[in-house]
Length: 226
Ligand code: CDP
Image 1 (cartoon, rainbow, N blue to C red):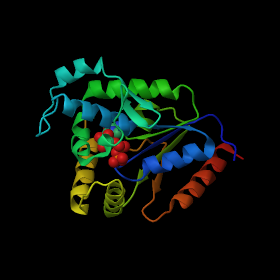
Image 2: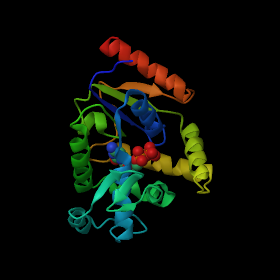
Image 3: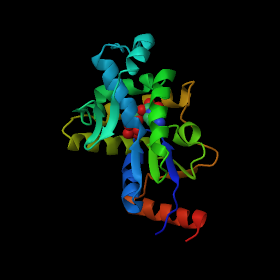
C-alpha cells in the first residue's frame, strides 16, 4: 500500500498499546518510529540517579534544568541511550514509571524533549507516539490517532509485558500507576494529554493488532486515496 510522506501522531492514555502499534506501522510502511515517552523516561532515570527528584516526588527543577544542558539522551541501536550507556531496560521499570509523570510536568523538560522530537520529525515518514504529539509537538501532523482502552485490559497487558521481561508486578499496582499517570498527564498545565480536535479515536480494548492495522489501512485509503 502506498502512503505519502506524512507524520503520523499517536497519542493516548498509558499502556493503550501506542508503541506496539507505532512499531507495526513503522515496519509496514517503512516509517521511522519515535517513542517520545522513552525520552521522558530517560530524563526521569537521569533525575533519579542524580538526586533531582526525591522519594515523595518533589523536584529540584532548577538543578534539573541546568543539568539538561549536558544530558546526551538519544535513540541508538538498542533503544534509548545516555551517552554510550543503553538505558532501555531501566526506563521500563516501575521505579521510573512512578516518577515519570511528575517529571513530565516540568516545562524545561518538555522543551528539551520537544526539541529532539521536532528535529527528528523534519524528515517526515515518521510515526511518533506520546501524549501531546498531535496537539503540541506536531499540530500539523497529517494523521492523528487518539488511543484508548479499558483500564483493566491496559493493566493486564502492561503487567504481562513486564512479567515477560522479568519484573514481577501485581495488576493492582500497575493499574494504580496507570491511573495516577493518566490523571497527572491530563491535568498538568503544560501540554496536557487531550485529544486533538482532528484526531481519530481508536478504542482497542477488543481488537487484535491485525485488526488495528486493517483499521488504519482503511483510514489511510479514505484520507489519501489509493
Ligand atoms: O508506555 P506508556 O503509555 O505507559 O507510557 P510512555 O509513552 O512510555 O510515557 C511515559 C510518561 O511520559 C507518560 O505517562 C507521560 O507522563 C510522559 N509523556 C508525556 O508527558 N508526553 C509525551 N509526549 C510522552 C510521554
